[in-house]
Amino acid sequence: MSPPTERFVKLSIESMPPTTRLQSRLRQLEVDVDVEAEVGVGVGVEAGEDDSSTSSSSDPDSEPDFDVDEDEEVMVSPSRLKYSLDLLDDDTRDGVVKATEIPSQFTLRGCQPGDQRCLFLITEPVEYTVRTGSEESGYGVPSCTCDDGGASSPCRHILWLFDQVTSQVLGPREDPYTLTRHGYPAELGNPYDAIADFHLDMLADTLHCDIVGQSADPNPRRVRETRDILASLNEVPADEYRPDLFASYSNSNNNNDGNTRPRKRKRAVVRGDLEKTIFRMLLRNDDFFHSFLSAMSARADERNEMRFRGLQLRAEAALAGLRRYADNDPSSSSSSQNAGRPKDVEWCAAHLEAVTRQLRAAIHTTDRPLSPRELRAAARAAVYVLEQVVLHHNRDVGPPAERRNLYRRLVGGARDDDDDDFAVDVLASIPPEVLAPWADELAAVERRVAEYGAPATYLARLRSLLGRSRARGAAVAGSKRGSPAQAPDRRVKRAR
Figure 1 (cartoon, rainbow, N blue to C red):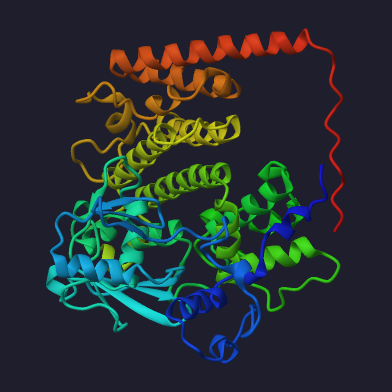
Figure 2 (cartoon, rainbow, N blue to C red; figure 1 turned 90 degrees about the vertical axis):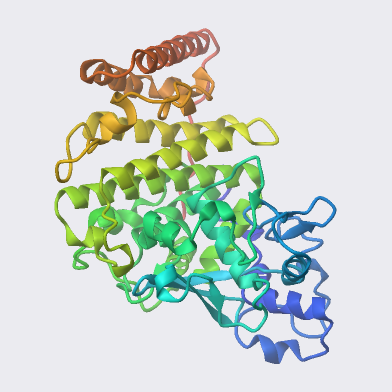
């Protein structure tokens, strides 16, 4: 194994926001100003230096940006979603093209609930506020505090924000989304209603930002993602990477009282321990954290792994919300913007269906075959979701109403489309040799589904999937027994 910090050198501090965002903007506008004075803080290339190495046009690892194909009238976003411009008039289309000409490497600083509206804070590094709300709130049309947009076209902050929102709420698809004159796709509907149904706390987690006014303690999802990032860089399983760093956070995912979760340290630097220093900086510094995410997502395989892990985290959060709702925990619907939208079975089922739908879409819409490592990440997420629903959620939750049983709603009940078998359709898209390590888990699921009852086609497909996985796993095991013995995996002891 390579030294544990060797891959850290691939992360360029000079590419970290906000410094290069402003420099890139100044280069595009060809403004002759003192860059050093404008940048203020941060590490970057000072005025007069040759900064061609940090140019987004020549750096293959730079963040993706908006790309408008005016001939095809399609816009490709930083989230790699496609938007059709067919509904836009000439003035609005020109405004959208103009808004996307300047590199838009933004950072989402936070979000905040309000009375039938929610606010998002975006920096580049100047901080702007985008407001979106219900029609009754007066913010039915999103607005931004910048002066770049107008009544007939959205600014680039609105375009960027709702691209991020759409990537989480609706996810990728083959057909382009239809961009409206207000800067969000028609398929999203009213953005505030879509965010309220999704729940702002869930959206904040998936977008890697905090909710303004909440505890300064480390976000449990940030801790998990930090562990995944560092473990991936060191090429070791996440649960085996530096347990001393994460032991105090192990129970923080379900902690809501704020008493036992460790607070952010005042000092990030730990002398003699570079990895712990990086760990603390990733937890406390948004720019540093997003720089790591950006650097890792430049590789398609790691980007897909991160997407699959993120979808599993979304499923975990949805199930945790349902558990709090079942326990009558007020925090499950504490935000004012979610009044009347409890985290009940219907809400949780919608999230889990979206997770499995996006897992399947990610597998089938790639421009290359996924590697076994990527497929294992997808399988891990799909098996987790299926296990949780089948083994732990065959019970009624909430007041008497139709379909208040998560298992019956997703697995055990009748469905309109047999091709849309919850989670099983994802697993059927993965080669059986990749699924073989989860054969025991799938067997437990199959036994419980047979006991609880499910449509015959669903159970037959699950059994077929299990049989192929077992057969392939046995074949692989047999071939290994017939091959020469391999040397045991000797892991280099990590120096601190």
